[in-house]
Length: 413
Image 1 (cartoon, one colour):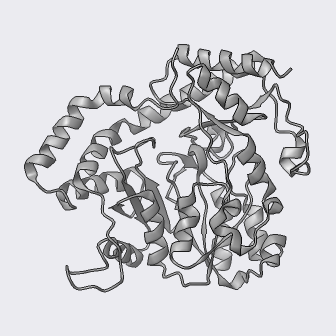
Image 2 (cartoon, rainbow, N blue to C red; image 1 turned 90 degrees about the vertical axis):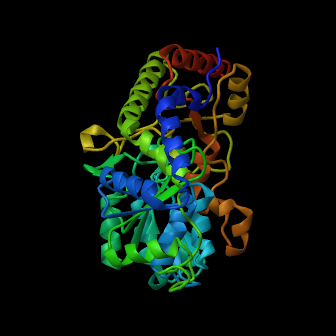
Image 3 (cartoon, one colour; image 1 turned 45 degrees about the vertical axis):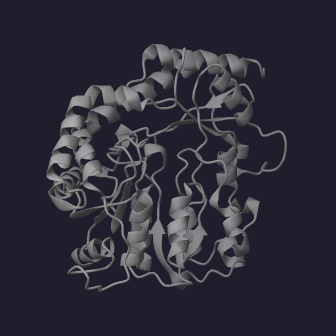
């Protein structure tokens, strides 16, 4: 049996006639940049996300950059974010000349830990203090809603209000997820979304969107995405060329009405995995060494070689009025890289999101980070393994994944 990490072809087969019709409409119009097709999608997504203002852009990476440009971040100022994320989050901070300040994650959710943010802002974080970070120069917080589960936003918003900071939600993996009854992007000053093809709402190429609360900042972000010009050829700001093209907007308008159904099917698949793995007897909880990371860099880690840790619904638990949309179904295992190779030999897709935390990236070496500065992120980077999950995955495929993986784990007993 073959089980890919993601099967986009299965999704396309369901909506092929609608997609082709939508593309034909754009081709007949010969209007490919901005225009009514993009405006219609922006209105649809604004309504879906409960956003005051929404603007399509070229990518989720550009959405982050536009948000930082809109609040006029200055070189040498700081932005707090997580080290356990895709590079675009930290990269956008660096592109405007600001400096990323990392706060470690909460081990069960993989999301940024609000208590670590508070230590930075109060001047009590040992890493930030060692690096000479002045809390008064922190301008914004970028929480990342990783794997489809939102970060713990209430305490983050409380900190932002107390210290008068902007909040930019990196919701690239979380469209449609909920926390305390609110949608991803509904808390912060900005919400930044990606429509990369593998996302829950994916285009057939690059695409992104920024949502904005404040009307003045919304106007500025809108102008910035079109070279900073308003009207055309009259440049108010030094902007950028970042527009969602009409073809992608048309495709996304076809897909959007299916999004809730697809998200629910992902949740059902996650529940099926949880049941099958629990019945297998090969599960465990995160050991104390991975929670406190006292054993980082020492062997062996207390995570048993023949057990796995299931993903945990925390802010995304229905009991907490939340919704985890399972952009990824991510477990923890020891001997992760070796296990991946064995799964591949059995035609099972898997992936690591993300193998190198931001503070260990070569491009940030000059800041002075050390590996043990954010041990929980390092631990996650060594253990996280994403398994196949998509709305169309069959029970037979899931059973094959579970039986194959548990057989591999049994070899380590």
